[in-house]
Image (cartoon, rainbow, N blue to C red; front, side, top):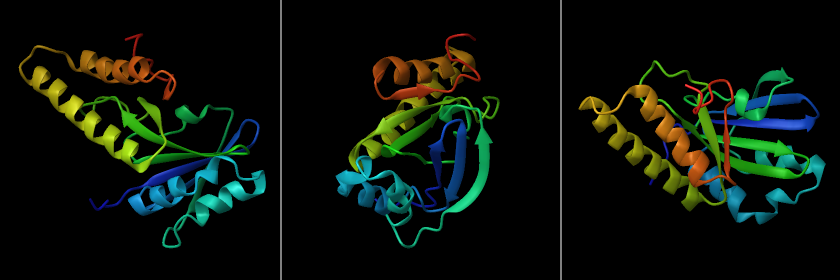
Length: 179
């Protein structure tokens, strides 16, 4: 399976309350993920090496500084439609998340989603495939007027939050259970 245009964002949190965002067109490719997961030390690197580990994970990837965000949680600064992989780069190491947009149509905001932590390339592929299938089934129910779009979005969020509570971080801008 070859990844095409796997955009990624790296959220670098080296100072309290400050997130530096870096983006890369091919930063979420299988090659980059495989390189990071093969080196199981990516969660144990010394603090000064975390950004270098991500940068050096694949020489063909060009990370560009996107913006600096202050005073927000990581899940609040992600555009869940724009990226295929989110890297959280902290003093403790690099952690890989699969961003999942809750929506099924453009009416759902791009900031309404859940980050699901993945620990291998196979898990990343599995989450991507299962979420696609789950959304396709929900879309069928919507098309048959058996389910509203808002309820379908809540079901996507519920699957992730209740199904994977130790791995999921949901955006709080539009909490799935408050609609």
